[in-house]
Amino acid sequence: MRISIIGSGYVGLVSGACFAELGHRVLCVDNNRKKITSLKKGIIPIYEPGLDKLIASNIKKKRLGFSSSIKEAVQKSEIIFIAVGTPALENGEADLTYIENVARNIALNMDGYRLIVEKSTVPVETGEWVKKTISTHIRHKTEFDVASNPEFLREGVAINDFMQPDRIVIGVESKRAKDLLLKLYKPLKAPVVVTNIKSAELIKHASNSFLAAKISFINALSRICDRVGADVIEVARGIGLDKRIGLDFLKAGIGYGGSCFPKDLDAFINISSKLGYDFKFLKATKEINDEQKEYVLQKIKDALWIIKDKTIGVLGLAFKPDTDDIRNSPALDIITSLKREGAKIKVYDPRAQAKSREILEKVQFCRNPYELSRGCDCLLVITEWEEFKKLDFSRIKKQMRLPLVVDARNIYSPEKLKQLGFQYVGIGHR
Ligand code: UDX
Ligand code: UDX
Image (cartoon, rainbow, N blue to C red; front, side):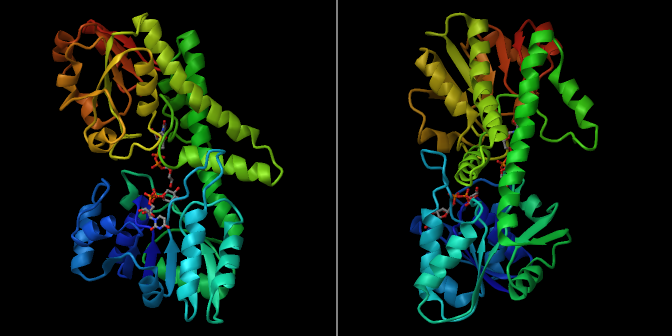
């Protein structure tokens, strides 16, 4: 089938490349011309494992193309996905300017039936507005449908999440739209939830909120574990083996970040209050997550006493491993707080260094964890990259000024580090 995806960011690019891999003809569109130019040369502006190869092979098979023209997209495709960003405004509301802008541009170029699909995460009832916008700006009286098809891609494993989804969700209002989307996803063997647009929109916000709530729940438990000397990793395992709870998303630490959870919770809280419901449960989820960063900072202060003029080595800048994405990364918040206390900061991240240079000032970027640990009074592990789990700590101890490790993701064995002479600080894990 011939489809277009407007917005070639993390979601648009992965979805486009995977749809092409399934055998469809895909045009990825973006209003950032620089991005389109480099994509045409096979240069990928983001790090996502396997994406470069997938894009290159589908460009070669002429199943994947790039353009900055929405007009071209509308002329060439029957299904047009909107995958532009929906960033949070100051008050937490989702900024839907780009969605409206794209919907209007699609309408202006439509000369026959089209199915316009919301891929971006949007507050419930956005589909109504997309329909109104298209009806208002359409030039030639023609049939069209709007649908919602939210994505559940995790960065770092996005291709796998697309190709082996737990479920496909489509929110449709006509048989024609339903048949088109079922045909598009036919090659994927996964349960398909066919519902209306509003339910599909809600499924996305509800999924992310529930996942974030699980994380805040185990982070709240980590606070209690610290007070009584219990181990949050074992508590998580003890509750998670209950199939109704599940082991996933029960890793305590400095909390969640990324381009989704923080903004989706804000948007969900905001739209719920607009609908007259005060979503206290999500407010508490967000509050616990914000507190967790303060909690880690307090642990560093409790261990170092004076932060001023101390050198702190931060291992990890990305909001989680296997991505270069630093959007809402907890590392950035804690670095800001430590600098405010007068600490000298050294940083290292295997992938996110380049993106961090654009926004981090007055920190020393290091080439590896060993160069980072030289002269440090504290080694602060924020992102649980695989390579950090294999460090030679006896070598690191010789280079540090103080043998203090603050493990904000509980990836180390406290016993092992204590045997090597380190002071170990975990999160509900000691
Ligand atoms: C996506 C979804 O849009 C968001 O709702 C979800 O919560 C996370 O994933 P993401 O792909 O991460 O967001 O956004 P981003 O990486 O910012 O990509 C959006 C792309 O759309 C950018 O490349 C931007 O240049 C492009 N864009 C934006 C357009 O092409 N047209 C516009 O009018 C606005
Ligand atoms: C999330 C959702 O998982 C995905 O379905 C949705 O489409 C987009 O948002 P993503 O944000 O890429 O994906 O990463 P995810 O792996 O969910 O982690 C989100 C945050 O939660 C990260 O900051 C991670 O460090 C944190 N996290 C995750 C925990 O703190 N503990 C956990 O047990 C799991």
